[in-house]
Amino acid sequence: MLGISNSMLCGCPKMLAFQVTNVYENGDTAFHYEYCEDLKDGRGFTAGISGFCSGTGDAWEVVQAYHKLTGGKDDMSQFDATMAKYAASGSDSTAGLSNYCAVWGKLGKGDAKFRQAQDSIRDKLYFNPAMVQAKTLGLKTTIAQAQLYDTAIEHGAGDDADGLVSLIKRTNSKVTADVKGSSGSTLSINGRKIDEIAWLKLFLDVRADDLLHPREVENQGGNYWAQTVYRVKSYQYAIEQKQYNWTTSVKILDNDGKTMTVKCRTGSAKSMRKRATN
Image 1 (cartoon, rainbow, N blue to C red):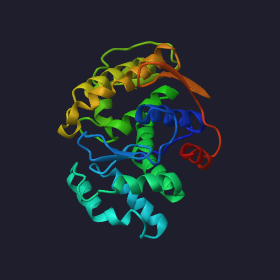
Image 2 (cartoon, rainbow, N blue to C red):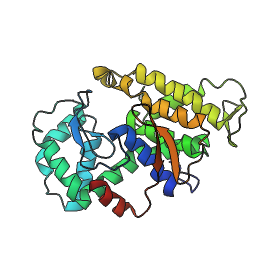
Image 3 (cartoon, rainbow, N blue to C red):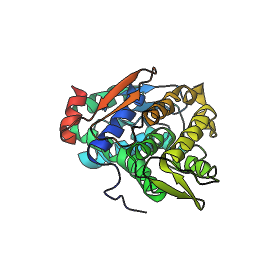
């Protein structure tokens, strides 16, 4: 696997990427480690800073990471057998998890090790794979790298029909001619030279189509994905404003289509987590 170089998101640009995705996930820029609910979207309970789901396996990975930090016996242990079963089967059932959200919420508010487990799995499953894809493509702008991260959070970073890797492949297949632009970064795709922002616009179109028409059956539940096209529209707005490289703030559209400015939350990750739960 390719390593993540210093040209990838770090510092305030990385924090802004996280905060922008927080807006789409929870309606504000805070880190809601305590969040938990059943969205009725075919994925069981959705919880934590990255929408970890009991029916897709990533919530189970968080719990296992937490067990490693606590020594193996903690408040989440009561759910181990059920979570392992649902992670393996992909079931959206919540049977056997009757007080799951209450326990998750309590730990998310007050347990530093549980928040650390969430951070580590977010990076392992979503942020790091997204940055690997960004490096492979040669992406240089903050907005393009951040968009791959946001896509990984919602679609997954894998190569299933709706995953990040598949969306990139679909986008690249549309590059059939050289395209100039003003982003200051040029990508080499299919032997063609295309401006990075021109490529990103294609990618956003592909993602919007996928949200409206998910390929995987498990992503079609409740027409939920179609209701989240605002994530794409928000990035399209940022492109229109020529906000290609983020430093300390970025202006986006919130989930209701209203403009808002996201400012980098400075300070240590620990203090940011503390503020997010106050």
